Length: 421
Image (cartoon, rainbow, N blue to C red; front, side, top):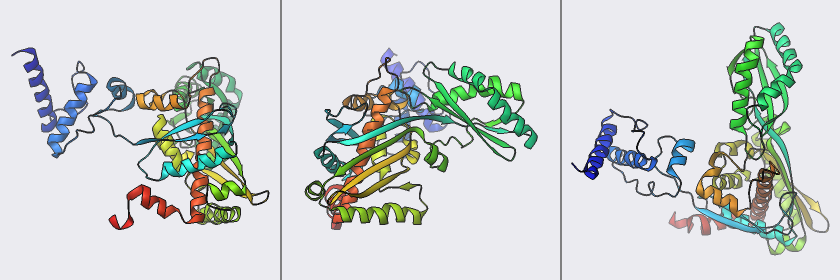
């Protein structure tokens, strides 16, 4: 048997073993390339389920990187349409007022980019959105179990007295990591220790996790005798909406604002100040209160999810990033002031999915480039652009409610004529 025939026979044997249940998807020979492994898995799935996975198998990502750093049992990709909005003018610390920013967004929701683009146009006509970003820091909060109130008090005292020792050990795990503070919360025999870190241009969740694990294993447990039950005790709070993150912030705390006069409201957004203020009050504020929501906004999650998917961020963190408040109030003769505030936005310019090819190109499009001379600046620029984009999306949707354009836009751009659906 020649080498080509031997390889084919070996491939067929591996596929049959997976289909027959004697070999699992992750149990493929190490000498095979990532693309070969993906091909074998796809063929096995096709035979098992009687389906075609041809589109899944067409991709441009680096299979070796994707399969070892991002996705186990790699078979291919799930593609999301990618569009662009802009130009968007932003006045921030990391985006210059003379720049025209184009924002890539990945979504399957028709009408979303068209709506955001209208908001971008309105913002740019008046000279841009004012943005402000604070690096609040990434958090991780292990849960500890004590024997009772006396040991809890001793443990809390030890944490206060040894903060500098904890800092030195935590920061030894990465040259980019800085421990900002430690906050503890006791509930019965449970103590939640919330560590807050600056993490440079990385989102920082992995860095914080590694640092906390080292501190817990090598210092806290051996010295205090208090057991760590879980490295994350849900007081972080990661990938869940929470009051503590709403109040104290997590990742980046972002703010964007714009003042629009009567002519822009009328000509670009087809609305007026009185209508915008009224729908803001009744929808975003009273409606959210009636629902017991943690987000007082129209659709932060829509914009953030599309931005995160395009730029290689952790999609699960949309749930916390979408907490926030939209404000609209009268300003001047028939104009409005509008702002968005998001206290909990975890994002990064390096790490995670930012290394994937299409995501890296999306970041390049926005001028996101890490500079060792100014650590953290790239992530701050990314947060500034996100803030202004969310403002644009919120502005356009709120205007659409006042002009009754929402259903029409979805009919024309999202699904075709209503009677066809």
